Amino acid sequence: MYEQISGNIWRSRLLVALFFVVIAAMGSAFYFAYNEPIIVPLAIIVAAVTSLTGYYHSDKIVLAVTRARPAEKSEFPHYVNSVEGLALAAGIPTPKPYVIDDPAPNAFATGRDPEHGVICVTTGLLAMMDRTELEGVISHEMAHIKNYDIRFMALVTVLVGVIALLADWFWRSGRLMRFRGRGRGGGQAQAVFMLIGIVLAILAPISAALVQAAVSRRREYLADASGAMLTRFPDGLASALEKIARDPHALQSANKATAHLFIANPLKDHGGLLNAAFNTHPPIEERVRRLREM
Image (cartoon, rainbow, N blue to C red; front, side, top):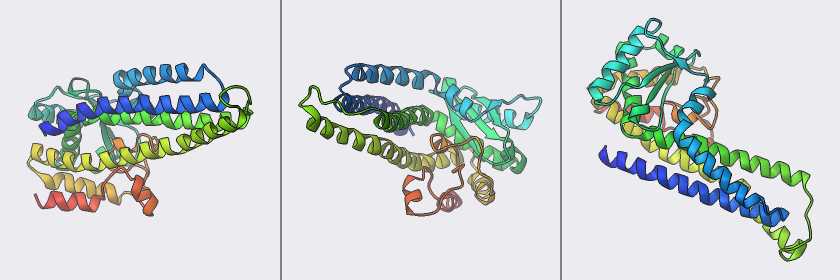
């Protein structure tokens, strides 16, 4: 667990550094393709502002995107009490409890560190789970907070989203702008750099999504094990995961940028080899099997 915490802190810094490199590479390709000197410094400014915003405000962005609201104890007493009790058992500050008004059962944690942790569940999950199952889900999300998974996962949400937006902007601008033959070796060199820009625009969001999926799958197994250690009852989480898997509803406020945050894939899209490569979650059947064997 301590290795995971240290690794997450280090990986968060590495993610920001790699983000700067990708944005600078995309900006350079844009510059050589269009001969626009302002693009490179603009790309660096965008990278700096986005990184700072992602670090300090990623939880607010995620909560706004998912349309979550604070959970009041008067409305959800058992949920709020469970968060408070499990935080005490985990030895971390009590995360702020939030809810999403949606019938699909799911949950996620966000924030930049345990002092700013947030746990969010759907009303569908609260309606479906019994006490031990709900505590299993909350303990899983509590493990994400204690292990500093939340910082890395929230940064991935914001930074990968920005790369995808910039790639989309590149495609749109490429259709609207004509090649200019001046400077940098003329039209032939410009065409080469235009090709490089196109390759970056295609590969950047794909590679980012693949990395996002790979680290998230490993993270989910560790959070399952850490959560089971917290409650000392792995069957509670296993039963909750089985109920979530059987439910047919897709979470309306989720998207591919936020899907990796949730305890189970909120998009209900598991089919095909391509989807399996980009899936941010390990198979629920395998997670349940591991929990049952504890």
